[in-house]
Length: 486
Ligand code: ADP
Image (cartoon, rainbow, N blue to C red; front, side):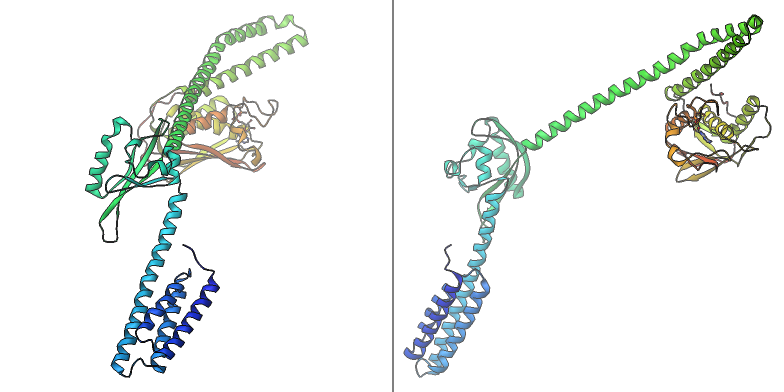
């Protein structure tokens, strides 16, 4: 709509109102004064602000009353009252109509800008099924310009075998008043199909009568591409995962077979060297004897390494059901194994009353055995001590293995759980660097975890959390046959 510059309009209104007022006083316009002021108000409605229209209307009403005061039209007060009343009514009515029109115009302008700029295609049809609106996005989606389609039916956008959908949509519209996100396909001008989601609703006039149907059509091509891409990624991920699992299984099998098959030749070498050492060492000079002893030690280390590797691969490959395991029995077994291994009786292994937990007994023995023997091995104390206790937090049994050993710097707390990672040389402390990796695997296989708190020179506490499906029983549930870990 064309508008005069704002200030000029306002001056014009003021001048016109002043002229009308002067004419009113001078010529006694009577009821015609209302009609004249309507022109002022019509002019004021050109201004964008409704408040200006209201103010102008108020001033005009005041001027009408002023005119009545200075120049009553006619001598009859009743005539004057009727004249001025009619004028005021006319000014009030026209103000009301113009205000409403202003509001409607603004709303229409806002809607038009939304329709013009939205990414969704919007079309409208009258009650006879002829297209009345076709926004720029609809032009882009279908490839037809508004000029080409306005006034025609919309069936050219529907593929032949989907024409029945139009009846379905009409039925749904009649039943529910709207159809939301109906997913289908539509035809582009060049013949290619477009996956779309359509929302259709009735358009009604201010009296509620249906004047047409509007459709909002969303292009799903990008979404479809995204879904396809996501599917592709998921497939690749599944394949990679399968391949990884397979390679993991192969590696486990390889480690198991290699370490298992290495045992027999190593045993033979060991027995030959023992024969050499017992029957022929007299034939060797001092240096020869030293070399032989080194070979015996090397074979012994290799034997331990192979045994540890076997245990490591067994943790993953063996699947035994979890059963109730009395951890006090495990402690007894560890103590007797410890007695068998060392003749030193200045080590102390103590424990609180431990619970019965759901676990693999063989693996539990291995875990206890490794952690306790580490606590005693990495220990310069006169009386190496390990104390085992347990607590239950949020459905998990948390076991703690506290020693008074040499301790571990915090920066090494993670790496000691990696296979073959050792903090000490074989001269200082013997070992293969596999024990803690086995322990962590056991904890993870039980759904739990293994971690530690330690500082150099202040001993260590290893914590092992094992989730428990049922409430822990603190009473022994009878003897369980525990296989000694290899
Ligand atoms: P291994 O004892 O055969 O070397 P582990 O995996 O059991 O292998 O331990 C890895 C390393 O962690 C050890 O070499 C040692 O340096 C360190 N470690 C393990 N337990 C303790 C402990 N209780 N106190 C101090 N250091 C430890």
